[in-house]
Length: 71
Image (cartoon, rainbow, N blue to C red; front, side, top):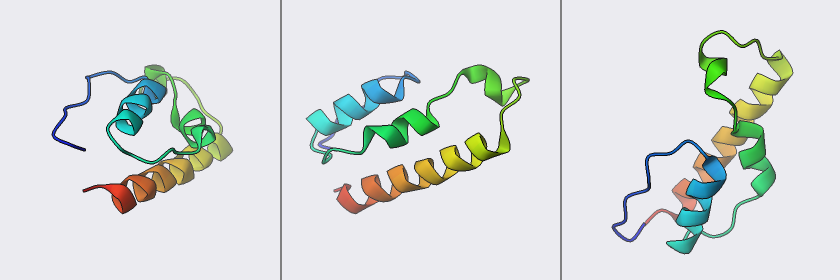
């Protein structure tokens, strides 16, 4: 994405804003909302299986979008 390095943050909407400023076509923000979670889900916070599966599918769609437009 034009030689820029993204900041080291975990707020996905901020990263998406920067990616779009660097030329990534707009992405459906609801996908990002599905994926964004607190760090505690990696450790001990329970999560519903349906939420985890939905987040996984949204993450795959985000990766597909980026891969299509990555130069």
